[in-house]
Image 1: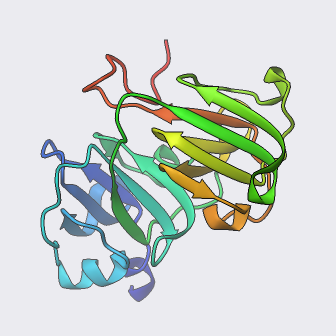
Image 2: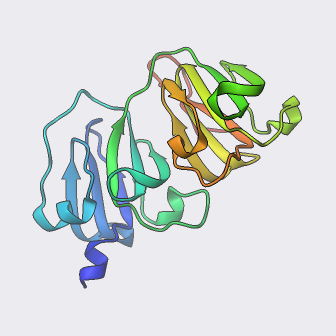
Length: 206
């Protein structure tokens, strides 16, 4: 149906590090599209089978629930994602409508979290570490602005890397609406790491 063409529900990262294949149905069924560049509208790509121009080998992709790189975000690493719950930790969104490459900013990671907008109020600095609970480190769950000094990070609305996730690349975020959040709430953060510099990648646990 037309609705299914607008709701890609499966994704697969190929052995070629720059390529992602999306499917309209779960378990890699239905129409498919191979991408090697950012795509602001996956439903249009599924209809036209466009691929885009190659980009310098991103090791991960950043997927969004809405067109034009808006809405909830999901980090996709090399592998298979047969169902929406394989990429979503919030259990809320079951669709992907846009994708773009996610480049890792070197081996070092440094992040500043601020209680209020415009980098004011209480501040927490995180250097080369993952933090499953901001509360446990003496910081509150209110994070209204962020400054990423080094690295690429993922923030979560709940402890233990659960709930809606937000990707923070190097730069400044003066207000929570700049990372497309509805409220200034973060309770855990972790690094996105590259196996080129780290023996273990992100999202692996022992």
